[in-house]
Image (cartoon, rainbow, N blue to C red; front, side, top):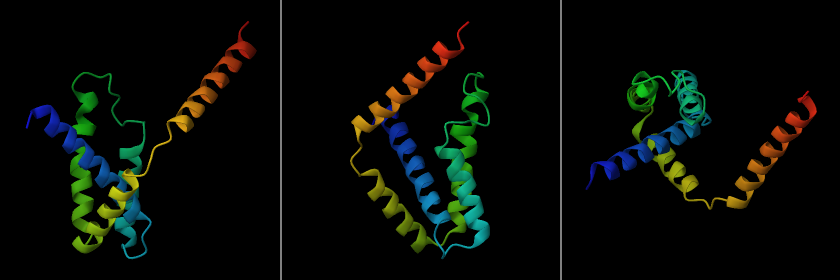
Length: 124
C-alpha cells in the first residue's frame, strides 16, 4: 500500500472518530466530563476554523497532524470500549448515508448570491 493511500485511510479514521466523539458527547451513558471533552474535540475537528491557521508554514498543520489525533485518542481512552465500538458503528452508518450534491450546490449558490447582493448594496 502506498503512503498516500495509508494517509488517506488514517485521515478517514480520524474523521470517523471525531464523528464518534460527537455521538458520544450526546449519549447519556457517558460521564459529563468526558462528554464535555468529546464535544470540544469533535467541534474543533469538524469545524472549518483552526487554532493555528494553515497558511503558517509547518505550524499551520501541526494541530491537524499531531494535536488533534492525540486529543481524540485521549478522549477515546476515557470512553469504555463497548460504548466506543457502538459510537464508531453509528459514525460509520452516518458516513454511508447518501450525499446530496444538489443541496450542496444550492447552498453554494445562496452564498454566492448573498455575496453578490452585499457587493451590489455596499459598493460605492
